[in-house]
Length: 494
Ligand SMILES: CC(C)[C@H](C(=O)O)[C@@H](O)C(=O)O
Ligand code: SF4
Image 1 (tube, rainbow, N blue to C red):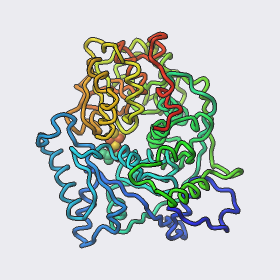
Image 2: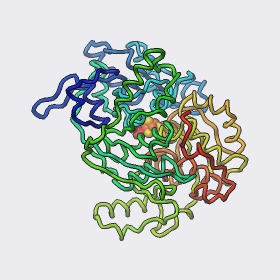
Image 3: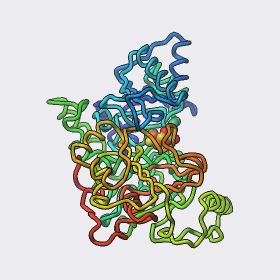
Image 4: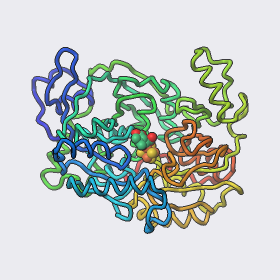
């Protein structure tokens, strides 16, 4: 962080990603070997860390930089009765193992019940740990979230977690760059989530492979940090190595005053450095994609991968019209699993459940957006609605604004923070055959519970669906839908 700019390298126009990479180069790889990259921030959770700590223990090594390592409990934590012992044995073992490892290796841990506990990708930014120009890793694919700050953030595997714990460095292969240009103005009711679902539908779940995506353009600049995080979060669902947004005033405003943000002169120095990070005029990307924000509509997935999405006003696509043989077969299988008929208008599809949460959409603005639509209304009969804040702090903030009351009066469940029904590593699961509109990021078979069926949507679509009982957007609720500026993730930084 705050690395000096090398005048020799500033001569060639560079992208944001190249700048961050070069500032963290410990050793350049030769003859096809990977570069060795310095890691500024290592985030840890209970699922992917136990074997890594075991490895250190066996080798008799300490954690190289405990001060740059921070852990939280998220995947296995219950969202009810958090003051009671965890009932599920596997979950309890995972959590207790993390607690023991953190104590033994001297790592800061935010445990269940702590104000800073929550989903790892919500906790880093809210503490001001995630900053522009740094490198961030975590044994979790959605680490790409942190790229919203102009950080280079990668998900890594458990053996790499051990490598970073031991050395604070990581061997990484060079990447290609892709500019994702989103120009125009989103209409009220259309959000960051719709942008990223449209991007993935366009480039496919493998379209980003080998690339670091840089989200650019007027529609991205107009987004708040919460909206930018939603977008970067799902970069991995396009197969990308990482996703990034260049830091700007919105980024600085979000960070100012946060617990780990620089202060005083350090703040001014940091901002001066952050301002140098944006992609230079004339820098070349290896690939480019364009999305028109003006015409974008609320999006929804119909299939079992995040690329199988269309506008909510469309119908379930007919696999017969898909040229690519592989994709056609995937679509056929997806429709079977999802129990859907080609040609059915998406708005006719009834749901059993609505899940509002996950590291994609569980920050305060997401909850505000959801609440702005349901306020004063009643959920559809027979639909189970679960609202799970991303962190204990988000929960407190929401309660201070009275959002918990709005949610409970609507008939929804207001839960404690964690990954919850995003993947159901705790009791929050769909029953076999149940259909859910979910603000999470993966609609894989069985993701939210064995036999469960997932439609990925924005918080606004989740709210409208919870009211009507069928996949719906605020546009279907008429003029009195409660749409506000912040519910499109525009404007406000906090
Ligand atoms: C459990 C973890 C390794 C996994 C990931 O890497 O993404 C999870 O967070 C997920 O979203 O599927
Ligand atoms: S909320 Fe979901 S996607 Fe995010 S880290 Fe947890 S399980 Fe993974």
